[in-house]
Image (tube, rainbow, N blue to C red):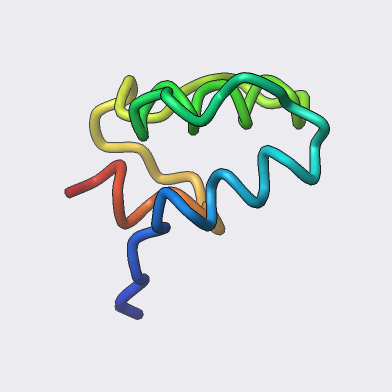
Amino acid sequence: MTSQKKVSKAELLAKAGGLGLKGISKYKKGELIHTIQIAEGNTDCFSRISGCAVTPCLYRADCQA
């Protein structure tokens, strides 16, 4: 099993900025990830599915922690 590093809030804010999301700097990490998932057209599943087997996933290290 390959160890994946957690995504920093700074990395999430940069990704959100690249998606054109505004007013998100005060969001908590989980809220920020949900917002990014929706903006990318994905289900906002972060920390909502126990035993998730979706790979690859950028947020997996944070989600399954």
